[in-house]
Image: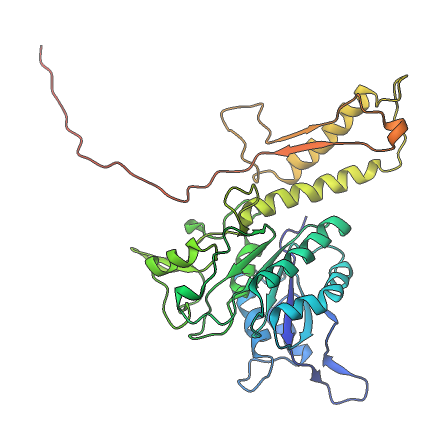
Length: 377
């Protein structure tokens, strides 16, 4: 599975190709990019007077993190007055865009310089797009939103850590000072470059590939970035003794009590979802041997359980929190109740559980002197 496939919904300006047959970059069309150089073919450049400066910047920063060849589906929408209206008015077309991308998109980022009218609506529309892809296309994804118009005043930030949008994360901060939007390309690129179980905030992965980052007009420091993080946003931070900038965390806009409160947890369960779907799809309208009471035959149930578990074990090797001290711990458990009457219902109910990793978000050390006592006899 290609876990790195990313989508970009970007407020843009159409680019005329000088012919009567249309435009090079036009609204509501999809384009598959594999490098920042592909933008040149759409008439989008790095020139200072290019009206699609935001589009170029977002794609360039995505590929600073994601390797060349990573699939990035672009969907250009017109600039609107409010960012949340962009999502609401274009939601049907975005849903169609996801279908046309074959349900392959795992992470969808939104890039816009338009202010949101209502922050909660903004996240709600994004969640509904992700839910639609999951429930209707069986192609789960998550959405990255930029926090618009942040000036550096913490009092302006609403707490989104108590929301219920577990397929949406919101980013604060940009690679330019006093920016009205956020560097979503860096976050999406980092996600595309790491396995599903890994946190974007993992220090061992290394610093972000940019020298300057800002929260409003301020450079991020640990105290200030920590306050932004406390409100549920993803932003940048630095560490004493280490150069460069890192992400503070991988929070989604939901309660910490939510099983899917982080990007790593969301991507892990979504990958299991996709593998289970592909495996169980083979059994749709298949003949299922049954007992005299119409229940599924126990050996058949065990066979399907084994097929799902094997597919996830093979497809997610290294991404499950398997206990290395327990040879029986595979990190996945599939169960089918053999007593269910499949003849009368025509439905096969399957229970699937996977085991995630834990993450050391804080490390506390008890430090003291060690003395040696010599005993003589």
